[in-house]
Length: 268
Image: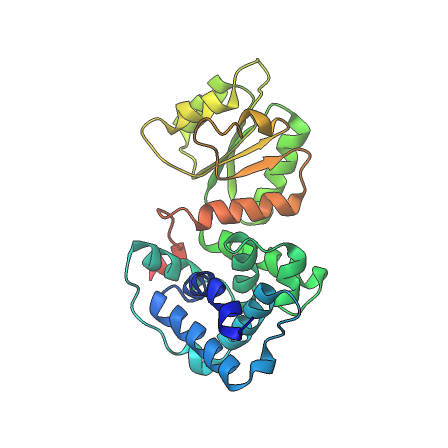
């Protein structure tokens, strides 16, 4: 197959990644153009016998770290670009790459590590750093809806370690509504089945009445949400969970909430 035919199907996604890295489509396209020029100048740069997608992203990450290309910035064109640029400006370059490769592009940890030319421990450290940096500039109030005390304590410890504040832990639907009324949360982490037999889904719907904010369901019963017959949650964690998964999901939920802006930038 011709080189152009191998690369062409991946161009829209490379452009998306470039846009996400830089915060603007103009500068993102500049990175992709530089990638194509490099491949045309030296086709051997692209290993076509391996995973072509992984190899393309690896080359693009190398080019993105070029000072010359990084200086080619432009004004953000729409609301998404403006919000993304403010948030991304506060994440260091390599943690930013690791976060976007896994959160936006859907690469597995093994693939993301190969793209960034590091090992599993190196990638984990980068993702942890991204989570801390996102938490530092987008710190928010967290409402936990969870009826099991030990699990609630684990979740509270995880989110506070990446810079957020837990305003309360609700064990029932009624408690969740009351806590949200006392201190409106910026994000909710909720179980589905609560202590008194009430539903975490109903509790979340009550809290969300008249407002919008990110919600992450943490549940042992994902099949109750992933039915395909109604809008499904964007952020879902299955019990038992790993701390790394919770940290990553909280960071993703806040980052992709278009109403959320980096406090450090907003204060300038």
